[in-house]
Image (cartoon, rainbow, N blue to C red):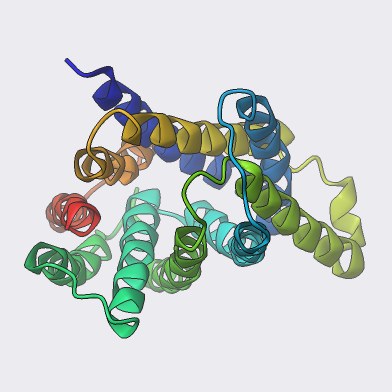
Length: 282
């Protein structure tokens, strides 16, 4: 068995775990603060990984990395806010699907012609989102108004995350990890400045720092694992594995937070995972 598939599966688990930890931390502290602290954990892993991944980035690569970081600062804050609102079984698949659709639409505008499989994934995503938002009523379920709020924040998070992916896609091959370091530094700088200027009292909040740092570390570990996997196996197959990341988030929420699923949500989750795979490999 090619070990790249195991590494790709680890990347998927790491991304799912990072989202879960970040969302859990954002239940106890403001999401922008969690996003800022997660950047510290992510940066530490990237700096350690530079010993393994060498490259020669151009100034354009670094600029796109910084742009990705600026967009990512907002995206991470919205993402953690959506996960904190919950249910995670709604938030994670929705912002993941929207985030995957944005680069595809951008590619169409730029003149690319996605495959039928990719468009099938988009269609399935549109079917999955209303199913995911069909929660039950009573004990263990969120009120409909709360679900609509989570859905709105999740869609917004996905739109911003999609542009983050567009910026990352502009970074050239062989540029190493420096553009990702630039992205982390830019995002952290923006979040830290915003917090210091508008919410000085937040600086005294513990911010569930361990969870925030862990989320950032897992996120960067997933990035490194993904790079290792695609160097050893076809991108199309590794991408299919990575597209399953929301499943890890949803299962962790189910096991640790006791989130309940309706039959419609189960169907929506299956459709969301299939849609993610179709878009990723299409």
